[in-house]
Amino acid sequence: MKNMTTLNEKENSIVLMHGTFNREIFDQLEKRNLQKVFILEGRPSLESSALLSEELLSRKIQPVLISDNMAGFLFFKNLLKEVWLAYQVADQEGAVCDIGGLILGVLGARHQIPINLFPSNCKSKLFGNENDLMTFQNQRVTPQGIRAYVPLVEWIPAKYITKVF
Image 1 (cartoon, rainbow, N blue to C red):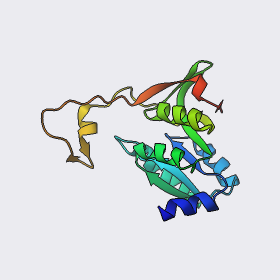
Image 2 (cartoon, rainbow, N blue to C red):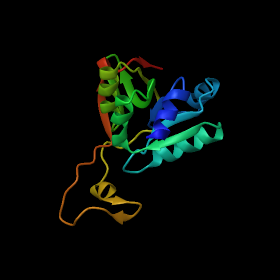
Image 3 (cartoon, one colour):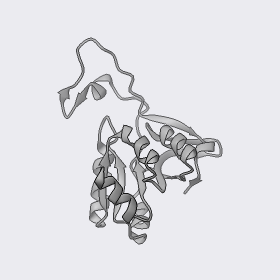
């Protein structure tokens, strides 16, 4: 926990990012002189965390990788100042974002943290296959004979969105 306390005390703006973003978005982070940015692992493919890490590191911003379900803890501990989500489609009623975006929106509303949406650099499939969720790094992590529900995107109502860029 000491590491989390240090982040809270020394950072004036802690951002959580989720999704795959256009490269120009990272220029905004770089201009703000952020030293660290939290990123979700982005299961099942982990593709977004790999792309986010690469872009952040190339700009000398330290990515802090968290498991997807750790986001609630960051809100609870007041370690976030804003959330950046990549969206695929947005209108006045809401947006389609990678799975996990809705809970970030709900938590942002509850904790009065802005949820900002930026264009995604790619379109996700609507659903993954069961094997995507039952394996991790090509190792099976679930018993045989169970089923999985694997949505990859979800709708976020406008009431949970602060701003769409």
